[in-house]
Image (tube, rainbow, N blue to C red; front, side, top):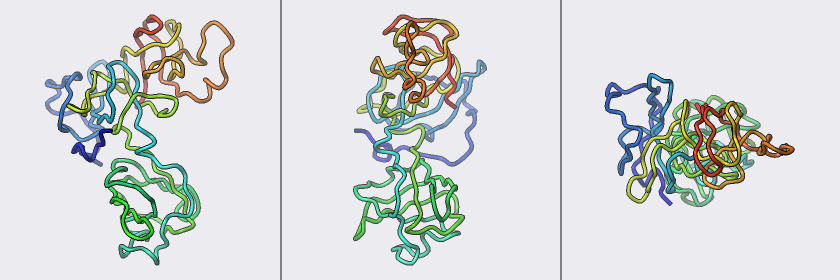
Length: 273
């Protein structure tokens, strides 16, 4: 499993923008080392939007991808943020600091770089902080130190609940009903052992692997049928009673412009920005 930190990925908190060398942009380029910060944005004159991304698993072209949620996110968790009076790093977890200490096992360095730390309940509730990086699990109590891009606004402690949102454009793999946070469509076939960096399309007109019958104008969502990052008609079935489960649990992505064959690629207009 390829990981962004190990592959030398770079993140930036800067605002996205079109490069001055836009004329040299090639959406089919893949790279062995990062040529742009992860998430770097290019928009063409047609309104198609592309983002520079890191992949953690081989993928085909023209399929939906999602961050690997099991590796780069953390579920809503209670009681593991360390009280400010017990931290190993002086000043951590206190308003005005950019350091947060949490007791977490089996974390490697920068697993969550580029993600977001969300305070979900109790002291500091409602704040979302951008993660610059994190240490590996160390010492007694399995301490992990997170470095934030912003200062802590309200002191947090052992009663504070948190969750971690994944870095949006890194550790990408084929979107499934498990890794169900699709953020775009692959432009090229990715071989991560050789070149784990490349471009995805996040907005505009693009060909995507199609599951089932979809006609022009139909709303599309991530498929739970055909494996491999495909799209299906909203509700999952064009000819019989639709599944309420499909409507509620699979993200809506856009609509059909040109119908394709079941198991082939159709033409779709997506909005994943």
